[in-house]
Length: 464
Image (cartoon, rainbow, N blue to C red; front, side, top):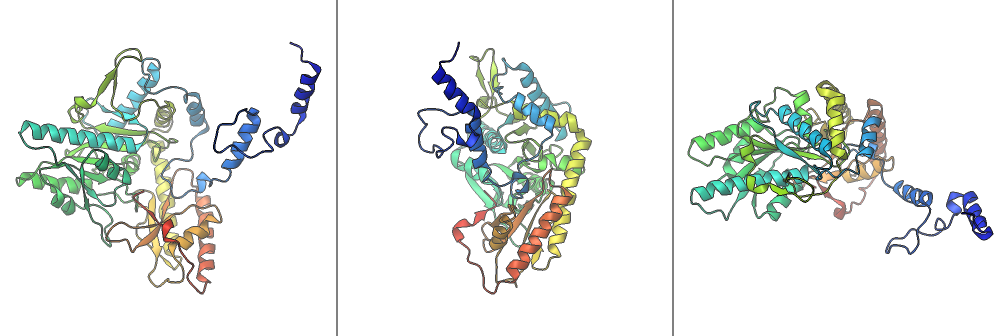
């Protein structure tokens, strides 16, 4: 259809108008209500793109455990499958098949017995996986109590005070008493004696962390299990273990093959991990695996048929994209065990290089060194009084580095440190640039005569 002269003139004006001189580009961005009219796609894209430049550079974010780098081919598959709804297994049967392959691969990676069918599911991340693992523990405990004619109104869960905040959420949402083992100077994790001492007949399980968000350390799963074995043998409760391997579940199997933390330990009944952390996938995908089908109560599995066929589902979320599961499978087959080993070893090597270098700077001392999870924690020596770790964190942000300062949990709230998370994509070159910036920041702060003010409201906690 031919354009009228006035319409053609308007079309021609817009066609030659510079992007930022077009209608709506010269006004502020809507923030409270949806605008009455729309705008050209290039205008909308660029205005949002420009606002996002104010975010930090994700590759310089040394606080997050979440993956910030993927191969070009992985990103392409990610984009191609973002429109597939993971729950629609009848409509997307091959995506469902690939999810099943991932579950089986992870189950074998974590040493589920070969004569046992893999039982597990993908989730939106470890937060959902934790909820599902915790619910299975509670249901199994309740079934045992009911079968014995015992009350079921006072369940509790034993864990270290260093657990991630999602475990607090689980206990609050599902009416479970949290029993926290305290930390102390020199021990920032749950120990065997502390775990066993907190258990009683109402304990649904013990949570062991493979890769603490505080300092990157692995809790001694096998030793905790041995303490619980002894407790049961002496007439105490028979308490299962859930391993929260949100980060370590895709590190330890490749770097620490002899470490017994997984289903080789009989008392371990379920494990979760985040595919979007050291599983090397963009957010968000997690995984939860049970030792046997019996460890996942059938009462927790729902069946829906309105999507076309019988669809068993065990999840808190429903619709979510299949892209992350596809990217996880891509990583498994593209990298293989050797590729994962190389990547995680490089991350660990970079973490220990950084920790050694920082320990040699003078004002800092290590609370962990990155030799387990490639994560380490350091603090200022007691004699440093004219500045704080919060000042160091703020100074590093001037160069784009995000290194958060945190206070430790109860019993050590007077201790604050800086945590560095090394992920795939932080090259040795970038690590050396970070060290130079840390050294410059430290020299600047050392030159100050008085302590810089710190706003306590900005204090963060490792648990969050």
